[in-house]
Image 1 (cartoon, each protein chain N blue to C red):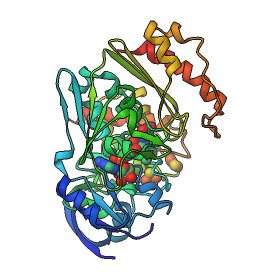
Image 2: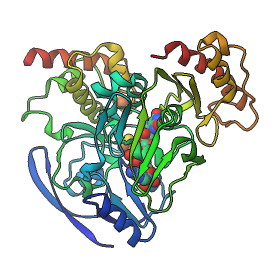
Image 3: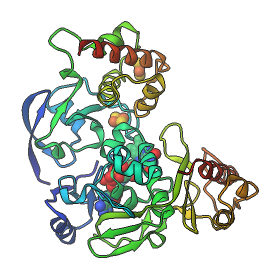
Image 4: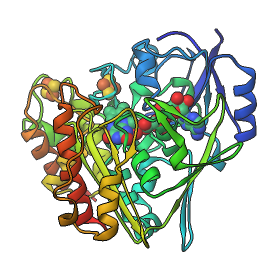
Length: 159
Length: 264
Ligand SMILES: Cc1cc2nc3c(=O)[nH]c(=O)nc-3n(C[C@H](O)[C@H](O)[C@H](O)COP(=O)(O)OP(=O)(O)OC[C@H]3O[C@@H](n4cnc5c(N)ncnc54)[C@H](O)[C@@H]3O)c2cc1C
Ligand code: FES
Ligand code: FES
């Protein structure tokens, strides 16, 4: 089977690599680019641990082939902070105890940022509804919801 | 995942031509139904034809009488379209309730219909509004499209290009979602257009189906009260860990009543 050369933008930088047709975006990110912040939590496309942004929108990188991302703009959790300074949404998760084991957290934060893009100050109910594609086995979601509300507020303040 | 060859289609003609030439070829739309079974080695297409860059397949056109949705239009675009919200609010709401935000950013109406999952949402609107499915070859009436479990009237290599929905007087879709996947355990779509009433159920059979008993009662009186004594036979309905056939039969009346009450 033929391989494909792909070139895409990841966290603002042009990257390229040789992939098989079946290489999923998440595997290209983790194994070729060594960006291991994006996680794989299931094989049914339900858990959202693999959430990244493609052209600004949240997508599950486990359900997209790397070859489909030719020329696209991808953002992962590694591209969220500015140097050592956490993004306000990351800081909010830290401050509000929005994680325990942390496995779901990168996906939660990428989903949260997409949510705030669409709904700048989401209500608790809107936050819960927009988290339907992300699962957490630890927290019981309460503090994640709190973190996202606080993160959204901090982001509004920073604008 | 098994290996396959990837082809990027430039336009409809190109996509259909590749499908004719390649063995075991499948179109790749949002991938939200196709990729998960491939990861589990439950599906093994030899060739995937990516439709994501076929611009002519995406987009929404609304005129006074119809809403036309291109096959590659994402669930999110339908949910957020001001024109769709105005013309057929039930359709925008249905699209906004499919899966989760990530799924809605990728999933498409064409993929949902071609897939005909027994618990899918879009097929209820297509059958419940008497829409027409247009392909590269012909126009198919919704009543002839859904033929069974993951089965449709589409022929090998036939490509859905768009779906044309007639604008109803009012309509509503209510689903009882599985808490994990958000797919319907049962979902009911009702619509009224002049004297025509349609009531369509998903999640309860091999594919979507109309419920004549409810439609006849609603034709006389479009109110929740008119169907409160309707009892759907449980025999032949789906039964699994999420609900027995009897439970699903019961939900049909409950959800149909709510859909009639919520129709707009
Ligand atoms: C976590 C999760 C939750 C979900 N929840 C729901 C839900 O609540 N309700 C619901 O209805 N759906 C749900 N879905 C399914 C989702 O709506 C899919 O997007 C949809 O069923 C398939 O669309 P797609 O564009 O992703 O198609 P794909 O997965 O790309 O394709 C599906 C099938 O259709 C064929 N196909 C695609 N486009 C065409 C075309 N234009 N012409 C002919 N054949 C074509 C493909 O070859 C393939 O066989 C969910 C999916 C996931 C992963
Ligand atoms: S890894 Fe679970 S949704 Fe992608
Ligand atoms: S913090 Fe452990 S899975 Fe969410």
